[in-house]
Length: 61
Image (tube, rainbow, N blue to C red; front, side, top):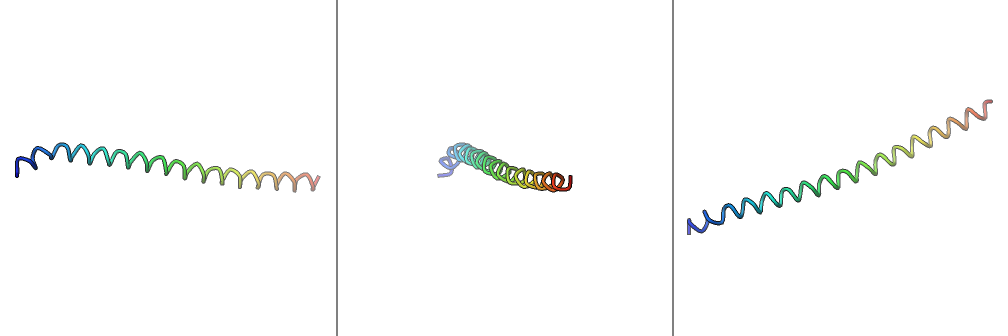
């Protein structure tokens, strides 16, 4: 019984590492997508602020 556990231990370790690696990749991709969405929203917000300021400046002159 103990020999079977010892023999399967490397396979279990490899399986665990592979699962952790895949989970890490998925986490990185999801985090990257979230950051991209946030940056797009921020860029749109800043673009609107710039356009509003340009319109105000044009109305003054």
